[in-house]
Structure formats: structure tokens, C-alpha cells
Figure 1 (cartoon, helix red, strand yellow):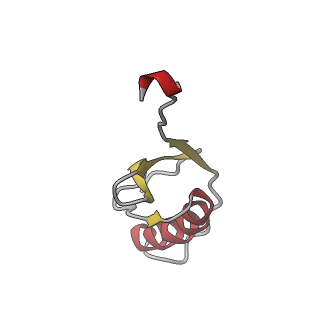
Figure 2 (cartoon, helix red, strand yellow):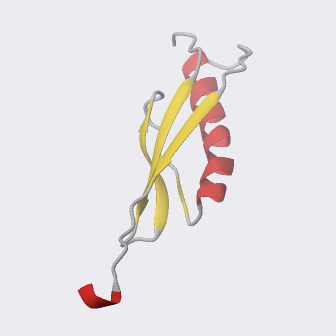
Length: 82
């Protein structure tokens, strides 16, 4: 695996399932979801460490920053629009 300067992870919220999930990652195979964004942020480094160790065959030290970009949407309505 090539050494990365930063790992970018894009997280999104699924309103139907009510979970945050990894929508995109620089590291293939990163499939993580959680009920809160904070919980997702805690799970991502652990999952990335496992994936990177497997890709490197273990024993190769690494210290790579992770940029988590999260997005969600909402709607604002006036009482007259309801």
C-alpha cells in the first residue's frame, strides 16, 4: 500500500436507518456505521488500523492523520408551509 499523507473519510447520515455510515474512504473496505457521529468517529480509527495492518502484512509502523468529513441535511419550514 502506498503511504498516505492523510486519509479522507466521508461520512453521511441515513435518516431512514438512523445511522451514520462511511460513504467514501481513501482506504478500500472501510465499512463502519454507528448511531451517532461521535461513535462513528471513535470506530473509524480502529477499523482503519485493522485494514492498514492487513494491507501491510503487519509489523510496519504507521501514523497517518484521518480527515472525517460529515454531511447531513435538514429542512426548515414555516408554520404556513405545513
